[in-house]
Amino acid sequence: MGTNYSPRIVTDQLAIVVDVASKKCYSGSGSTVTAFINGNTDSDAKLSFSDSPLHIVNDGSGGELEFSQSTNWATTSFTFSAWGQRNGLSDDREGVMCDQLIAGNGHFRMCLFYPYPKLQFRPVAGSSTNILTSSTSFDDNTWYNLVVTKEGTSSGGSADYVMYLNGSVVNTATSSVLETSSNFTQYKLMRSTDDDSASTSWLGNFGPFHAYTKALSAAEVIQNFNAIRGRYGL
Image (cartoon, rainbow, N blue to C red; front, side, top):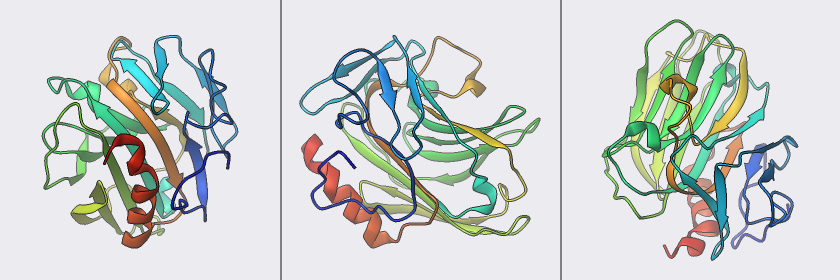
């Protein structure tokens, strides 16, 4: 895959990997980032990159990455995993890790909101619903791995969700709120267009993002966490 993980991360049913520590994702110069497996590229001059370890630095002024995709997450079991370190906690718009955009202005986003991370869904022409809210809070200037899994593939039916923070389960829920939506068109990292501000985005450091077309088990979530945690002194 181009990056040495120890132990190895789970690779079964990986849909996308964005990890600038790999030369296959980021050459080491410029601003172009390539998503593994997905194969699409994006760049944003508002983003910078820092070593030790290599990661994205976002100053909160609107920097983002977008990668087109066509998976219908409503009828697909999934796992979303993102690493981040927030610098400042006063504005929720600076805590959006990923937003799976839906054609017609719908949003499905995973957020490191202070004090409790959330998984939110807003259907087209509807209002936002918190599918999951963490029972555990977090601090700024500290690295966290936020993971959400969904098990359930029936349109119109319910699905089981689990949220993890640094490898530990912080909430579970059963919900049908997402199940009838479709037309997911993009992975947007570090910003949600639902915030109606092109000049506000993630504020802090941003690490690897992974998405799977299956719900990882608790053991697999911990395996992935242990494979990357050493980079950030955890």
